[in-house]
Amino acid sequence: MPGRIAIRLADSMKELWNMLWEALLWVTLVAGIAGACAYGLRRRGKSRDGESVNESVGQVFTLVAGLQVVLASFLLIGVLDTNAAAEKAVAEEADRLLALQWAGDSLPEPARSTISASVRRYTGEVIEVEWPAMTAAQRVEDTAWNELSTVRTAIAGTPAADEWQRSRQIAAADRLWEVYEARQTRVEAAGSSLSPMMWVALMLGAMLSIGLSLMFEGTSARVHVVVVASFAAVVTFMICTIYQLQNPYGRAASIGPDAFTTILGQLT
Image (tube, rainbow, N blue to C red; front, side, top):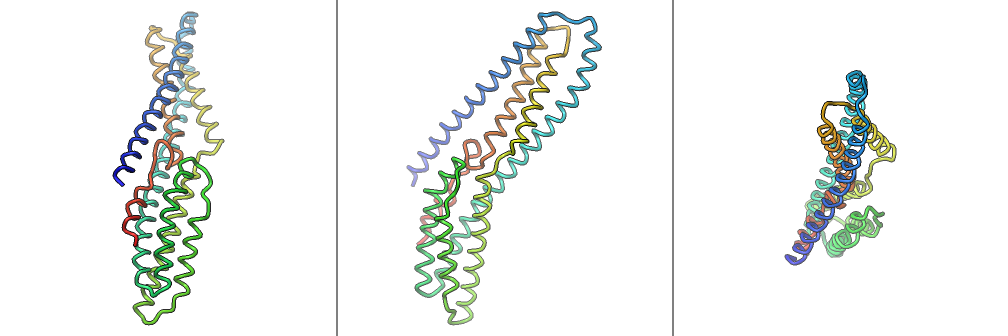
């Protein structure tokens, strides 16, 4: 177990460095292009009505850039909320699985053995099969879901000899329903992504904002280049961050199956 955790940690660090270099490449590229454009425009010389141009461009830039910031912030907050909900669902699903196992231990045979075996198979299926699929944003198959259906059938088909066993049967059914709900939240989060229309609005706003920043005229060409390049870098980094955080189980958020791995050793 410690060896597996160490390998997973090393892979996560490697993936993190790859993401950072990829983001740095895009930021540098866009900032360089924007800076070069600003320098080229300034070499053409200032217009005689520079102050009037700055006033006109400033009004439009304030509107467009303001809308861009609001949209990017809204999307980023939404992505972070989705990731937080997914992480909470993973922890709750693992906890409810363990509680389901304990409730099943109170039931008579053969339901006890059926529930124990199905819960273990379900947990292994989530770790070994479903998690790689969710990390790659692929469709999650129904194999693990079938294990939960087996548990439901075992609980429903168990006769209750007394009130205490009846209460344990109800408790097992309640834990199973909670596992269903947490699983649904987890799987839905794996397929979450921004709509194409949102990406069009985000990219269009970024291009318009950077383009308008090129049109400002000032006393120093060097300052203008630095300001435009910095603005382009910030906008690009924000877009890269939103893109990487879309999938809670993907490269940036990288929610792992640690909660399931932890309870696997406690299942009997």
